[in-house]
Length: 363
Ligand code: ATP
Image (tube, rainbow, N blue to C red; front, side, top):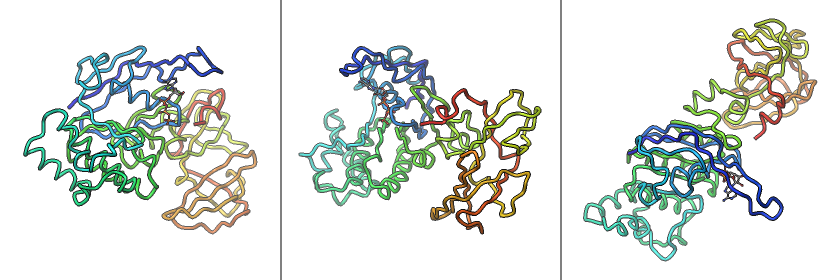
C-alpha cells in the first residue's frame, strides 16, 4: 500500500487544434503533494484545471514533462501502468458489455491468473457489499447507471490493488443515486483498506467523502487539507469561494486592525499591514438585522431560498456586492426589505487584495 508523493510535477501538451496549432498548454504546473495511505482523497477544482491529467500521471497513463512520482519513496515516474497495481473507476463505467456482472468483477483475478476458491468467496463478499449479489448473472445493459458504477467499483476492489483511482465516478449519475453512492464508496475504501484518489468538480461531494481535499486551479495545487481545515482556514480567495462560497468585502485599511468597507468600520481579529484587504465571512456567520444601524453594512434582500435544512438570504449591497446569509430558521426579513448585516471579528477571514479580484475568485 503506497504513500504517494508528487514532486514538482508539470505536464504540457502541444495543441493540435487548427486554431491554436503548436501552442503549449500547461495542464499541470509545478504541482507537489503527498497522499497518505488508507486515506480518501479528492482532486477538486473547476473544469480544465488539470485534475484528470494529474490523476493520469499518478497512474502512469501520462508521463510528466517535468517532476517525479514516488510510491513509498520509490521513483515510479517511468514505471508502466500495469506494474503500478492500481484499480480504476471511470465516469463511463467501462464495463465489458458481453460479460455478466460476475465475469466483469472477476476479470482482474482471472487475467492475472489469480483466481482461486478463495477469490470466488472474496468476489461473492464484494458483490454483497455493493448490493449486487442477486444480480451476478445480469449483463451491464440490464442495470441502472448507479448499479453499473457499483459493478465498476467492485471490479476495482476485486483486483486487490491497494490504490483506487476514480475519475468523476459520480458525474454521470442522477444526484440522488450519486449522493447514496458517495457513502458506499467511502465505506468500501475504508473496509478494504484502500487509498483512494477521486477527481471531482463538485465541492459538496468532496466535502462529504474526503479525508483530504486537494484544491486545484489553472494547473496548480492551491491548498490541501481536511474539508474542515480548508473550510475554516482557506489560504486564498479561490479556496474560500470554491469550497463553501464565502462572502467577500473589499476594504481599505484605516489602521493596523481596522478596515473601512464603504464607510462601515470593521474591527479585524488580528493586525494587517497592507493598505487594501479582502475580508471573507461565511454565510452562516452573517447576522441580518431588521433595524437599520448606521454603523453596519446595509443592503436589500433580493431573494429568499428555502434549501431544506436552511434558508438562504441573498442581500444586494449598494455597490452591487452580493451577500449570501444562511439561517437554520427563517428570518423575519422579507424580499425587497432594507436590512443591515453584521458579523463577529472572530469569524472574519483575511486575504491580501489581489490585482484582479474577480479573476482571483473566478472558477
Ligand atoms: P474536467 O473537469 O473538465 O475534466 P480537468 O480539471 O480534469 O477538467 P484536464 O482534463 O486535466 O482538466 O485538462 C487540463 C488542461 O489540459 C485543459 O486545458 C485541457 O484542454 C488540456 N489537455 C488535457 N489533455 C490534453 C491533450 N491530450 N492534448 C492537449 N491538451 C490537453
